[in-house]
Every structure is written in C-alpha cells, then in structure tokens.
Image (cartoon, rainbow, N blue to C red; front, side):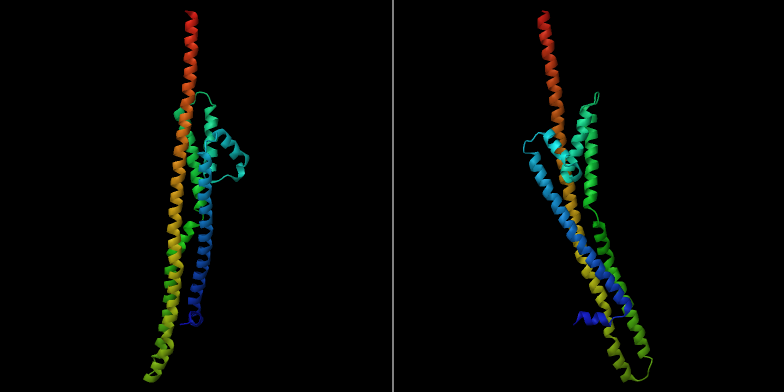
Length: 249
C-alpha cells in the first residue's frame, strides 16, 4: 500500500483535513521538544541552586549574588530572591511581628512560584487541545470521503447493466480506503500529543512540589534566624539588667 498514492487519489476536502493534521503534528512536536528542553533546564538549575543553598553559604551573600544578575533570574533562584527581599524589608520594619513577617514572605514566594509555573506551562494546553481534536478532525475527513464515495456509488448503480455496475464499484470502492487515511493520520497526530501532554503535566507538577518543598525549608531557616536574634537580644537585655542590679547592690 502506497500512502502517498492513496492521498493523491482522495478528494480535495479530505486532502485539506490531512494538511491541517500534518500542520498540527509539526506544531505539537515543536512544542514538545521545546517544553522538554525548558523543563530539563529548570530542573537542572533547581538542583544547582539547592546545592549552593545547602552548601553553608551565608544567605545575605547568596542574596547579593542573585541581585547582581537580577534580570536573568528564574526558577528557585528567583523564588529565593523575592522571598529574601521581602523578608529583609519586613525585618528592618519596626513593630512587625514574626508571624506577619513570615506570612508576607510566604505570600511573595507563592506568587513567584505561580509566575514560574505559568512560564513552564506555556503552550502545553495547546498540545492537549491538539491531542483531543485530531481524532475528530481525522474522522471528519473520513466521513467527507465516504460521503463522496457513496455519491459516486449511487451514480454507477443507477444503470441496469450488472457488469458495468461491478466494474464501477471496483473503481469507486477503494475510495473508502483512501478516506480512512484521514482517520489514521488523526490518530498518528493525537497519540504522541496526548502522551506528551500527560508527561509534561506530570513534570510540571513535580517542579511545583519541589518549589514548595524549597520554600518550606527556606521559611524554616528564616524562622530560626528571627527567633535566634530575638533570643540574643533578650539575653543581652537580661545580662544588662543583672549587671545594673549588681552595681546597684
């Protein structure tokens, strides 16, 4: 079976639907490869930043390093930058409780996470749409082709010559097979698109979980830093009061 010859023998409506499906296939594969590259890059950058974050580097130094290339930040580094910036601003503000400080820092990092996930999800819904409508578009082309075939069959069977009818049926009937090419191409486009959509969606969900795990760990460190400083301040104040009391005695 020569697919190309069958395609050339189909009617113009079926050919149009096949051309649309081929365009969908090229578009979906382009998006798939691009999104896989973007997600792989995001996962790699997350691991690199987490290794640096847990290397024992001072958070202020890490923040200054991130601020040096502010316009190029993305992923976990961007989330860290936004969170630490908000925390530093609130920490220097008087009469700001630790609970308020942590709540607003978390809100800023959650907003940064949503922005990062939105950039990762670009064009992925389009892959899902292509995977959903391609079989129907292929079926639509097949239906148009079969309608055309049965119209031709109706014309040939209008004659009374049985031999002529059989000859014409042998010529027209293969048009049904030609029309089914549209359905086959529709499935060929849809199956990879659906698989890629599910895979990429799973990877994005994993990235979402990794980002939230990071901010949970980061906010815990900030909590410790706040209460450590508060305890240090209280200890200094108590020591000052004890010295003053001893001096008074």
